[in-house]
Image 1: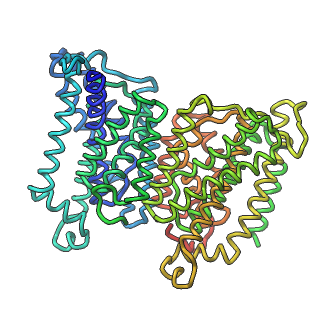
Image 2: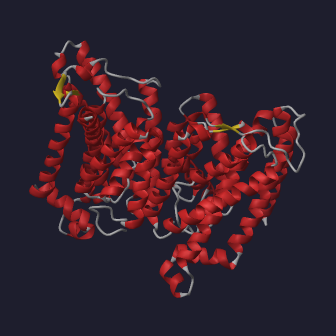
Image 3: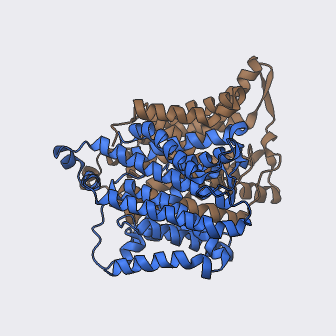
Length: 295
Length: 317
């Protein structure tokens, strides 16, 4: 019984760690640019595929298997460079438009990226053979927990702390918060919005691609993984509150753990339960748990 | 005046299509007409009321599954009964869903509709004993106007009686929608879109009118969804997935949400262009994504906006 509970919690928190990274990317973009970026799921998928390729290349080059997480994470972060292309190439044209058009433009990116991934990596799922158990497992309360899960949970926690520190203790974070609060005033005070938007969107993208890269030893990369994850990330940010980092953290934990419990107790309820919570939150408390005033 | 000529020509072409066009092209008209009905409804919400639903595939799904349940579980084969039941169920679901959704606008409205859409999608996907899960359910050939038509081959049925039946439904739906948007009610919706505060001061019950528009658009989407079933003979959950909701908003934008016939044009161009692109390369999403990006950035009025020379009184939804 305890073994079962430990398994549930660990797999739930592992999923929550990945969800947090992607949702944090969604939040930072929404907070500053007020764009709900449907493409963040596609960035996640891209990170996954780039991660698979990086690890395959690394294994071929004869790198020690124990260090595979380094090329994986580096590839994940590097794939975030696509963010600056999408921002400069597309999104910057619609900043003064209605948010409907911004949303539809990110939907266009979703469509394009799904096929771009299929063109590059093919349609069959891609996985990293056997790396998941490279680090072995630890015995906790009568069950075996993969060490890789614990590493990702730790990394995600570290990134959460890092983002918190970035937002509250650095000049860049100060500018981000000021711009999220009052764009005109920040601009009047000399913040270069063009550069800030490019940086913020790239940061958001890199969080998504890193999330995708880190998940890849545990599951295979599939071209639909992006459009499936975005609806979960969507649930996270709605429950947590749009634009709030703390909201992304708590929301990811709620969605990740509930999903894992639902799968084991009553699989039919899996996502249904989460969307019902989303609806309840939107109806009763549209700001979410940590969000600001609703727009 | 030229507008009427174009319309008459389009209708004439639609009537003649099964007789002169290759069968394959005529078959593609069927999903076009089904989507056109749904989009007329969606645009009452998008173009006329200024609310963008990202979950309207929910109602397409309700319409299609209503038909599938009636024909394959309850042995009801009359298409008239199916359409009425789809409309009624669409309205029944839209009433509470709409009441919750219209309390919000813009991104929150979009998110709430998306969430409801996903509830329905996961429901039909997971309760496979009831709905067949991802394999879907058969939508058996419906009888039209009381005639069972079982003697016809599938192709003859689809490009014959079913084609004209769909066309009749589309024409009827267009006429009704034309009356709706020209009525005082339609004017109220436009006022709400352009200036909700002013509408409220003028005594228009903003939330109530948005709710009416939501329910009407859901009924249209459900009827369109029911029409989508017979051509494939099968109904599956992808019809209700969120990307499908995105696609129908895409069609509306492609044709032009600021014009009455824009969405119909959008559905037509989308269906045929998609078929043509897929016959050349399998990656239609890449090309369609690029088209959507170009439209959003350079031509938010869509094709109808490009065709009409006068500055579009483009509303901001």
